[in-house]
Length: 429
Ligand SMILES: *Cc1c(COP(=O)(O)O)cnc(C)c1O
Image (tube, rainbow, N blue to C red; front, side, top):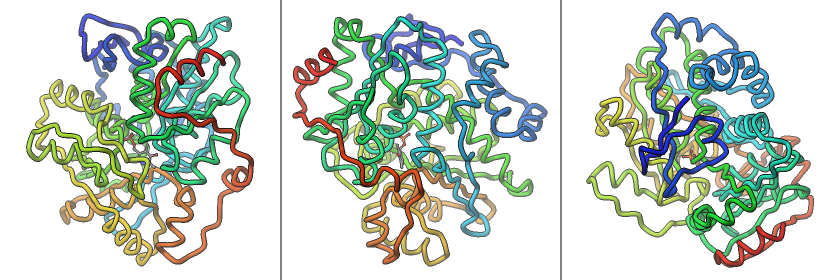
């Protein structure tokens, strides 16, 4: 697969190289030059496969020139070696696609584990590599676990101090070995900006073999396309006609993957881009003005992002497909409304968490009676144990993977958002 740099169309790379580079020149994102397209016959065939075989098949249509279907299947099987997505009916025509049954209880396990497997498949054993990633909550854990104990790969994770939940932090700051975590005095955008500065430093980049595992890495988005097809396969046949999918958005990687799924032939009627009060995109879609505010802390912290990295990919896709941006649903939900929605969901028998609740709230508001609505369950409710227990006045039982880590010591370093300090840290590893 050939990909081009959105900021410099002359820069073209193949997938194996894009996955190693993360970002191109001028910090441009990579975008596929040509998208595969499944017709309805092929879609039918795909629908009948199991999750692993179908996923390998879909991905193979992108990258068959770089890896055989047989080898890709092995990588996909290793990457998606956990409970596949579950379709949980919440109302007659609304379901949650639960993507949080992986090792770190968030949808990010799909992308991070596929990326880790492909990187190690293509990585020369003599090349050492440093993965530098900023996290607003769940990326850190997914990436840390995906790369844990891999040879020749060091992982450095920056997160905004005090702005992610205690259990989110426990999941990745208690690993040690090749996983280094730094609490930054600042917001997620500050962390993201430090990562960008490191990528801008050519010498540093070369010296430590810098790579990023953020959703700017195209491999993560490709992996995520697979669960949209799984969702389609799980939806009852008579309800497959008018599917509307509401996606809780932060960096907009998940939404980009959904739109890519549609572009290659998955019949989705429309998408809703759901945000919390960090509403740069809803405001942009409404009035066409790009005006990010300072990032606000909310109870849906993984979405506390006011300068979403993947947005240029969304615009590129709309323009390439000749879709109208006006067809994209959108909206933002305040903390107060989120709390109210969590209670409403609990009342109808579903315990959710703030991110999914935001997607549900907007779906409920915008869904027509003849539509089938799907909202993405991006994280397991217990990752936000304190918040949920307080709001719903219930006790949550932790899944084993979380319980195991909850009382381990935290190995994190602590740093001001200062690039020179970070650089020294990276050079000393
Ligand atoms: C990362 C994350 C999101 C946002 O996903 P993007 O792909 O960055 O838009 C939403 N919910 C949860 C729980 C997350 O961890």
